Image 1 (tube, rainbow, N blue to C red):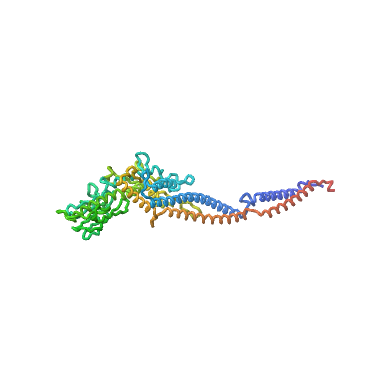
Image 2 (cartoon, helix red, strand yellow):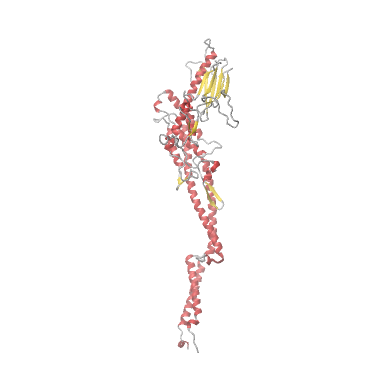
Length: 540
């Protein structure tokens, strides 16, 4: 009789032990990792959903990183805007409260404050988040605003800054005769009539008006019987131009004719002039019979044959108008000229006086980087070509949601404030001439007019962009980011819960299975050991 070996008869027991051991290893790995399997294959039918959920979680995480970066950038930009708002209020308050107390630099305390605020404004507009300039539009690697010292004082002798442009414009606006390039003269044919005329371009036809100095606007009087003529074009030589050619501006003149009448004391003549910056200033002269003659008045004439009283009064009025126009030109017009010079300098491209001598210049020409500091070097604020400033930086924060958070230092609100603060800080009088009463009078009139214009230009104008409008745009972007992030947090929690239910384990259940397997495995080991120890003698 043949007796078979133990190994061949008990191989199935060994296989069972190996299977139990494999199960125990699997359960032990699950307990230590907390996952059903380290491969998608081990997830069974849930593998596809697990892949999709993990993809969703990865996408949410990338959006969360984007949101963090955006909040940082917008936060830094908002800090700059908050400071700019404060600067606008500071300078406006300084302009409103400033008087004519000049220091040894020829400036008021308010202007000295504006100097510090201007440098601070440039720093705010050159703000960076990481390696990204925030107010350069798409040109994120370029500082948007030139250094404050270069803007003020130029870059070397050949490249003009704001102060030089202001000085040149002031000379051009004052003109050769320092009268704002307007003049008053008795009519050569009507001795009781006075003509107030703008300076013409030479040669006169066809272009007679020039862009500098004061412009006549209106004239009125309370003198009974006197006749006024509001501005009319000066006569020009007819010139035939194509119908598509823009009309050439023509110099204008206004007049007053006493018509043989003599004013009574207290009668007034009012003349209105348009300043270089587009604002208007009035001259009001009052007829007087007092001696000495009060300020802002003209003497009522007396007859001295062959000159009539009306003709004598017209001569006195003509002289008073000439003096008043000179005072206006050397006072408030200088401030208006500085404001307009700011417009010229901060324009794109900057505008410069087109010829010399400056006092008789008749044109403005485009400045270049070779002769004028270009204050803004970021992406140009060209809505037609590049879209609105906010659209110069766009980020996706969800599958179908994007936010716009771009900004440019040459946006209307930012440029206007920077320009106004710069002009206020740049203007100065000659402190060495303030001992001259006439010069001091003009200097006080200049700073008073400048203070008024600075305060007006820093005030909010309905329909025009303000710094607060930009802040509101950023606030809207931040609100969109927050609401999207909050929703993504909830989505992530739900997706993670579902993923855990597919890939995760129940620790108690796995532990129980391990204990059961350990017991079964121990019994199998004992049985196998007993079988392998059997012999024929023991069997018999």
